[in-house]
Amino acid sequence: MQTKSIRHTFIRDGRFYFSRRVPNDLADHYKTTRIVRALGTSSSSEARRLVAAISAQLDTYWATIRLERMTVIGHELRVQSAVDGLAKPVGLFVEPTLTVSAAQSLYLSLKGKGRPKSFKAAADRATSYLIAACGEKPLDHYTRADALQFRNFLVARGLRGSSITRNFSHLNAIINFAVSENALELKNPFLGVYYDRAAGVIERKPIPVEDIRKIQEVCERQDDDLRWLIALVSDTGMRLAEAAGLLKSDFCDLGTSLPYVVMQPHPWRTLKTESSNRVVPLVGASFWAAKRITSNAVKSQYAFPRYNKGPQTGAGSASAALNKWIRDYVPKGCSMHSFRHSMRDRLRSVECPSDIVDQIGGWTTQGVGQSYGNGYPLDVKMKWMQSIETRHQNLR
Image (cartoon, rainbow, N blue to C red; front, side, top):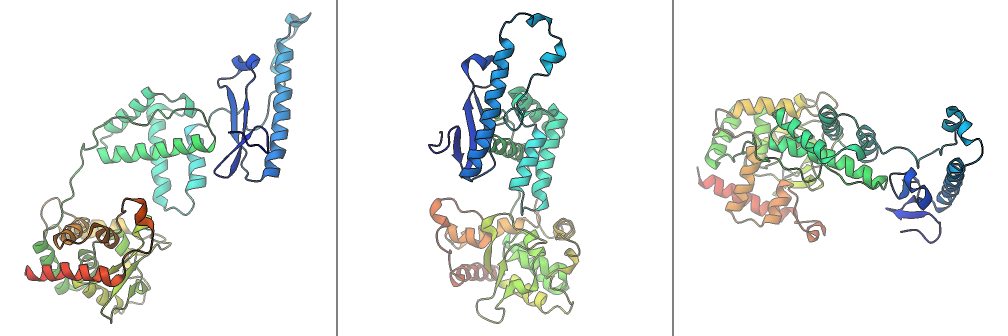
């Protein structure tokens, strides 16, 4: 929709876009009926200035084309260089559609600020796979056949269904953002491509409560930093990366009846989702681990210094070491992440309301209403955590 104040513009997300219809007599000169480009400003005065300049360029260019098409005496005697040298419009309205690499750069420059390295790595991976499978092209040159070829390429590489889903998701996010940002008139051919999403996916099983108790007993006997990390995860259900990147100061009120740990992003360890920001009560083995961590004589601000020696928490190293250790204590198919699945089942077993379960584990709760307010207070969450600990103790 054109804005009333400035001709040949419309506003999207607070920013101005240039939009002008291609004249009917020049329709064969363009592959679209309308020229639309972002002006890159939210200032009406700046938009008015840019539109005036762009419109003047277009009017001059169109007049040149019309003049070129006129049949005059001697028209056929001109040299080709004179034809090639006709004035061409400059600026943002005649650039070809963005290539996929340019679209990725735009996506990362605007959406990647403050994101972890994994955000860029995922975008790089999806784009590189597409280029390897179908070549580097402008976005409007990709077809459904390219999308199917991209799918077949990922399958041939042996990627699991979940990995194929992630690559399509990242690629679609890049393309859709470029289309929206530049008001491009094209349909994304990579949407809705079929593939077996369950292919190669290994079901993550929860760890039985009796096995959790055995692991916790061994952790208390061995009593070192690796076992503290396992014990902390076992009775909180937090992600391993979340736990490995904690500070000692993230543990609070350990001498009171409401001890807890604050899950918050740090420069060396971000959180997976917005809902991952949370406060988790400490009970059982997690409370024991918290006391051992905070009383550790090693002079470091980190709860687990061995995994925080560089700019990023070494969550991968922690996963490899701890998964290898717990293998002897858990059923086949279980891993450190299985503690998280177990926590959800343990909370279900005491009939804990699902929205409280989500707040304890940092899972995203569906529904607009869930974003209102500050959530459940610590003492309410502690009540349910103590319920599963009591049930756990009764199984001894």
